Length: 111
Length: 114
Image 1 (cartoon, rainbow over the protein chains, first blue to last red):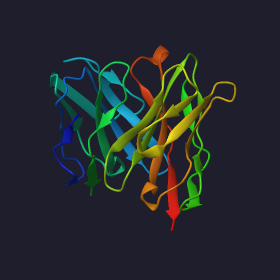
Image 2 (cartoon, rainbow over the protein chains, first blue to last red):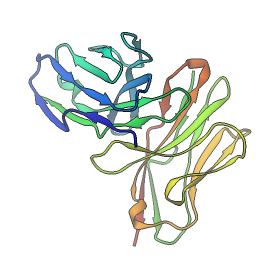
Image 3 (cartoon, each protein chain N blue to C red):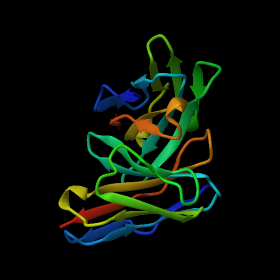
Image 4 (tube, each protein chain N blue to C red):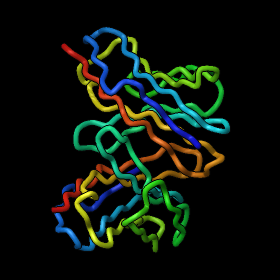
């Protein structure tokens, strides 16, 4: 069974801090994704990666960056956290032409 | 551009009754369509998908969905709802013309009343 693990379930950070959200998948999937989920807006794609060291901007990349140095790990970085980045962050992975497999999410609060 | 609409924020149904959660989509090419379910404080779980073939797709937990190309719809259905089906449901589309990106609808909260 595919497992996508997000390192933190809950995170509280201060405005201006640099924040790292980590995601690891154990099924050798090529594609990995970071979404944020906000009530009434569904899931919005921040960044995705289709290979090691490759990344593509999604719909809302501003204020975020990503890193994929190894195939199994995809990190989301908030360079300088702001209160409007308080949200649920979901990581997902998939092989080509297959459904996404999601982690359990990280609920980030920026105060 | 691709988009997904779920016209109902909330659907209430009595236990044992049939349920429908609606989804319409807009893509430029042939769509890959998906339904996901989210339970409280969890990630999304895959329910079913339509890629090609039979318009009626069967998935997990007794759910099914009907692909209607002329109406650009992919409604989720279940013949007899359970209280445990209460959750947030997301429809998603992937248009291969846009590579690996999946686009999600805003979600529909299903409440099954005992």
